[in-house]
Image: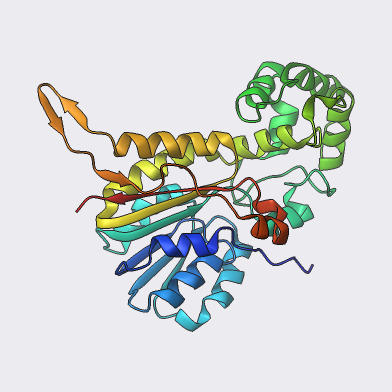
Length: 306
């Protein structure tokens, strides 16, 4: 199947935050098709190692071709970025000059019916970014309790009708298991057709909640940033692009904690980091017109103190 090419979001802005920096080791924790890494390699010929991680084997295949001109300095790793500390340890790398993470589902994954990420395409109810992972959306929808379904719809999707949506799914699955994206959309539409969702499709927030839950996205994001900051070299920078409020809130909070002085007894210890983005960087109108999926992107950057 021919997939639409993934368009890297905020590419120019991301590259600008590393301008003038000497990057010996760079980590792209969410490699995707390799667009961001390609630009970094073009702008920074001094790079000795670029480590690119992704859970999706198909994305790694595409990135391998994209980054072929730099094959001698690129290391591609099939893993969740939460294991970046283990990857670096295996490579005997103690410090990193640049970390970058583009969080969430890619355009390529949305286009693949067999991934089950999109409510606009019929496919198996999967949603695993890593196809070798155990937990799938189908398992959650058909096996989890009404209470647990409601909880993830409320917490991860911020779905206004979380309670009635969970109840409807449980009632429908008693008759027949919900196996496909279309079956789930039909179940949602039995109770969520009102104007309460505004311009959003009624299934948007529930699909988001399931995807986040299947891939442990929020927990992984917290753990990864907490691991990455100590691994930064003095003067090293870390950037994160997020696509919804829950992710952005985590990044904002963790960066604020790392850039706030710490009190230990009577002592006031200097913070580890300097915040480079008081407000998140968002796409221009021109970029949104070119790539409508970029409209909700927010990018934040911080720098390790020297």
